[in-house]
Amino acid sequence: MIPTILPSYARAPLSFAKGEGSWLIEDDGRRFLDLGAGIAVNSLGHAHPKLVAVVHEQATKLWHTSNLYNIPSQQALADKLVEHTFADTVFFANSGTEAVECMIKMARKYQSHIGQPERTKIITFDDSFHGRTIGALSAARNTAMTDGFGPMLEGFAKVPRDDLAAVEAQIDGQTAAILVEPVQGEGGINVADDPFLKGLRALCEHNGLLLLMDEVQCGNGRTGRLYAHEWSGVTPDIMATAKGLGGGFPIGACLATERAASGMGPGSHGSTFGGNPLACAVACAVIDTITAPGFLDEVNRKAGLFRQKLEGLVASHPDVFTTVRGQGLMLGLVCKVPVMDLVNAGYDAQVLSVPAANNVLRLIPPLTISEDEIAQGVARLDKAANAAALQPPSSAKEQP
Image 1: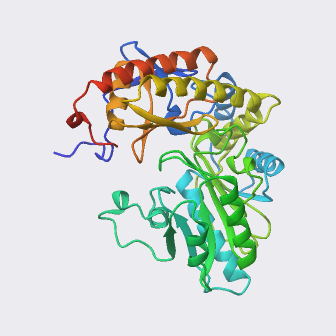
Image 2: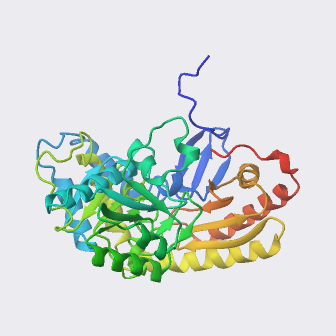
């Protein structure tokens, strides 16, 4: 008999009752150090006092009105994002995949708006992930996620990562845009290098294309800048973000330049829940915190410490790990043993991590993690690595 919750997740045997900062507390009182942060969502940790206060205040006043009316907290959030980014305008959604859908629609609408409706193709990359809707799945073309859900939508061409020649070879009179993650999360913590992003920008300028960036996971301070593309000095025309933007409250955003959004008038896109008063009030508090003086400096300092300790962990376990990669507090351990062996061993060591493609263990803790918690996390990962090294190869469970 099918369970009352659709069995689309391979869940761990854990039920958390409470969260405090970088910690999740089980029903039985066990405390787990959370190096996954709800898959890079709990950017300020669990039960952050500022977010708790904002949720309480806004919840006692107004939750939802719909976008039939002006929403002051939505305007405030849009103004903050425009102030701190390349963008001139913002559309709010409920999730990352919805923000990506808006980005895809906007890019195609732009080409149609300037008299080139035949330009609909979007170039994407191997190991990419853009969400679970049919449109976002069609963009990534990951067979593990698309099997049984076909046919996928037309209009996407996938090329190898970091291969500018392959990108250029795909550009033709039907190409509208290039879509890239500055740091791939689900794909295995793959950082796009500066020359590659600069090359994509140049190809877009030369061929009249829009550069789209998916910062759903790598944005909102995760890499030590507000958005990861800032490290390269390359700006997109449109960007999708979500996850850490709400600090745990569901919200997504599609940011764009005035030029890229020029075709989007009334009725061109919409969302019933997107940008409601409660979500935007929380996200305003998150952005204020992340952009406060010194906050991202601390993220970078702690990221350097974390990476240094992880390098030591790799050196101590050459039979378990290959290397560390990533940027900021978006790090990955490339594993020699099945990654799920490490995730499962972590449960026994009371540390939480997230598996990624290509046998990579993702470490994406709250941006507020302390130095002591970093040390504790690495010690617990060391314990998990010792246990995983003893497991027979057949012990790996299916990755969710």
